[in-house]
Image (cartoon, rainbow, N blue to C red; front, side):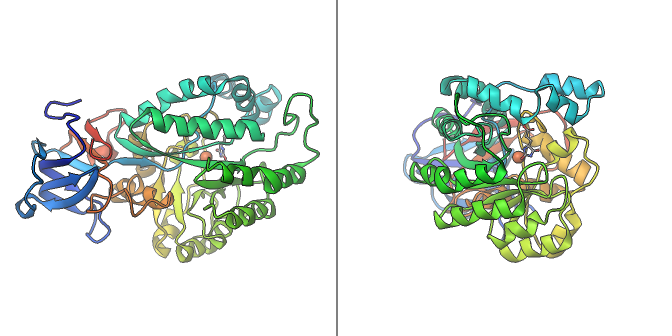
Length: 418
Ligand code: DI6
Ligand code: FE
């Protein structure tokens, strides 16, 4: 904890002598305020703006002199699979030595190896293994993180993953949003439970999830949203539609891994269901972008996966701009295609690899990431009414947050005023 910071109650708190990148949508660009101040009461922002116009501080408020530092909204990683067991560094080595993905899969690798590792772990071990990844994100100012299941591939272990994610949120001062990644991969030769027969085919698997599992997860309130992987190697648009129909019926918002490796018109499918976000989108087309704009579906850019699998097709950022699709940026932290736990580096990748601007990158890990989680009214900007989730930085200009690689200029991280 930096000098001048203390945990003296969540009551009144003032951060003064600061420069603010508010990310307020009602201001141009990053919504900059020089000579700014923020006032929070009970963890919520009641004022963010010019210090000269600041209302008188609440009685007994603690005042922090930011010494001219920049404050941004706390960062939001809106797409992660950070709850997983083990790692796949061995597959990485095999691929570096020239092995194809197929050869890796035949050698017992791929998603299935992560499923085996997860099923072999206890819930406590899963939490313990995932915690350092959460800590790495938080060390760079993350105050909200989305965590997906999807490496259990049976009801018991999907529920265990979601419980582990919720527990991570209890262990650390951070908001964890959980997503049930119900259709991630087909557990071809993996029996749902020891001694049971594997599913006959993908449709039978989809049917079991749609008919039973998703309702149980909704009743237990283990998931804040439902997700699927729409891809040739994963699930078809029709299978995803079956899942989304059921999610809608149960009142759960949906998200989609869409058009990552090929164009199955996942972007349009997500839009048709009013998805919070469609993610990856390397192969999305203009019809997809237009449909997303109309539906208000956020395009989540995941440059870590693009980089790690050495994809060459870039997501059509120009089409998202042209149609006014909001763009988020996230790590996709996962053991197979994006073993990445730095949202700062992810912003640099989004700029360098996808040509996103500094403003787009910073909005992508704050305001638009909040929107991708359905939390746009609660966090993601420095505005009255939102949680006092702040990141205070030792930088001369906000662009440095996107520009540097492997350097962490975080001075302090504030979650709900503390
Ligand atoms: N898209 C991906 O890139 C990862 N999952 C997904 O839906 C792959 C996950 C893995 O290989 O473990
Ligand atoms: Fe993902």
